[in-house]
Length: 114
Length: 114
Image 1: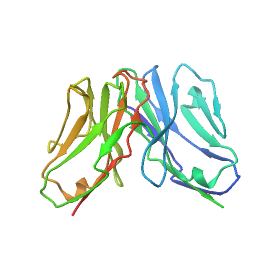
Image 2: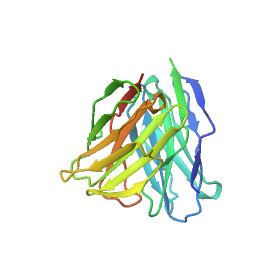
Image 3: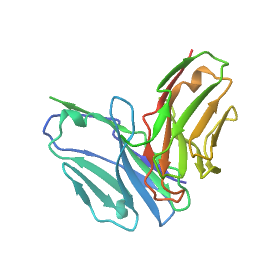
Image 4: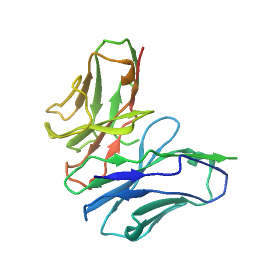
C-alpha cells in the first residue's frame, strides 16, 4: 500500500529563516513519482515539483529546493530565506507506476511571520 | 493559473439535494480527476476519466457520479447530500492518463451542505 507521511502538522517561523518540510513515503513499487503542491489561503492547489524514483538528483528552483533520498524514503522540501507569501499548506504526494491517482500526505501548515 | 476551470466556486445547498460541479481541463489534457478535500479525511481521490472513459475509481460514494464528455469537460454529480459531504472538491487534469504525468488542479468548488 502507498502512504505519505508529513509528520509536521504546523510550522511557524520568522521571515527570512530557512525552513524544511519533511515528507516520508511508503511504496513497494520500484517506479513511482513524488510531488509537492502548495495550497495558499485562497484554496487552490499549486503544483511545485515532480520527481521520478529513478532520479535522485536534488533540485533547486530559486528559494525552493528538494532533497530526494531513496535510502530513507524521504522527499524533503526546503524554503530558503522564507517570505510571508510562502505561508500556505504544503502537500507531498505519491503516485505509483500504473496508477495515476495521487496519494497525499496530511499537509504541513507553514506560517511565516513578519 | 493552472488552466483548469471549475464552476461554481462556492455552493450552499440543503441536505437531500443534488448538485453538479463542472470542470474544464487544461487545453490538450485528456485525463480528468476529481478529488475531495475535507477536514477529517484530507485530500482523497474520487475518480479519473481518460478521453471519455472511466480509468480509475477511488473512495467515491455511490451517491456520487461523474462523467467526461466528448469535448473533455467533466461533471461531478452529488446527490442525496448529507452534512458530511461539505468539502472542497477539486478537479484536476493531465496530458495523458499515464502515471508520472504532472496533474494540475483547479481552484476547487467549495460545497457547503446545510
